[in-house]
Image 1 (tube, helix red, strand yellow):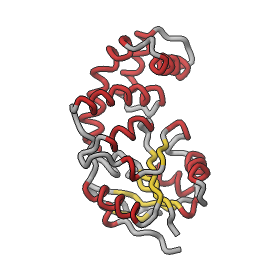
Image 2 (tube, rainbow, N blue to C red):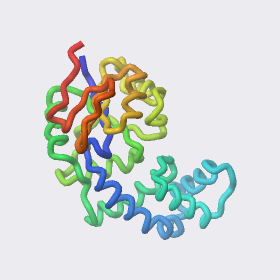
Image 3 (cartoon, helix red, strand yellow):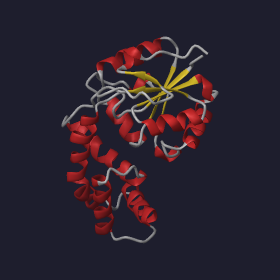
Image 4 (cartoon, rainbow, N blue to C red):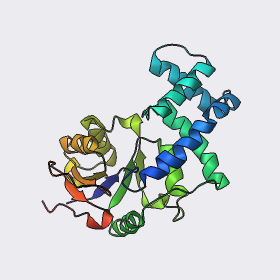
Length: 227
């Protein structure tokens, strides 16, 4: 029986275009000035140091910023980049520059599942901080009360089964009691290897025929496993 649901964000609860066409360009344009202006703040300094650690050599701030921009352009899922992006996006949300996009069907069913007593969690490559901002400043208002917890890449790679083993332990439920929702095949494969149930959200394009996952066009088509 499903007792908890873990959902991805990009392409699952929220549109890919919001992340790629709004959030990413907003952070790319501002990351250099933000890092330089706040470089003495402990939270920012820790992430600049983490950039050096990620590349295996000590970098000046300017070189670290250039590396961060390169990672943005390459769409890398690297923790210090995601952390700094979250800090920049906070200002955008608070200033009203944009609101977090969430699909109507996702909101409707997340609320219904919460009312039914299911525990809801988020697992995204974006930092926990960024996740909370997106749902906290969503086009439907503050949705953060729906969720019991958030996970990002600090718990593991989304395409490796160990991350989902760790999530199950953090949640405190057997993997077989957890349903994972995503639009990425490799993530679903990793979750399935860890023993979670999976549903592949395919909002656009042809439905895949060679897969071991339940398929859904949107949240209204998600069905819980019966065994």
